[in-house]
Image: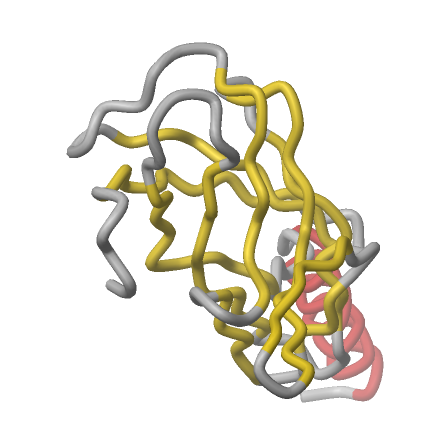
Length: 151
C-alpha cells in the first residue's frame, strides 16, 4: 500500500473512532435501588430508605429528593448521643466513588411530609433523587407497613 493510501486509511479510521466516541452518551454513574417507604398513620412524616450507588471514578453527592406524592421531602440523618437520638436535616450526602451508601432506619433517610393522599401498603410511590453532577434518578419505592425495619 502506498503512503497516501495509508494516510487516508489512518485518517478515516481515526475519524470513525472519534465519531463513535463522540456519539456515545455521557455515563450516568449514580443509581438508586431497594427503595421503600415506611407508612405511618395519618399525617405523620414517613421515612424513605434506599441504596444510593456511584459507579463513577469520583465521589458524587446526593443533594436532594422530591416527589409529587408529598408536599415536602428532605434528607435527614439520625444522630445518636448516648441514650438519646435526634434527627437532623442534611444538605447533601456523599456517595463514594465505586461505592454504595445505605439509607436505613437509624441512619440516613428521606423524611417525607405532607402526603397528598393516604399511602397504601403494597403500592409504589416514585421518588426523584438529585445528585451534584446534575443527574436525576427516579425510583419506584414500595410502601411497607409501619412495623417494617428493613428490606
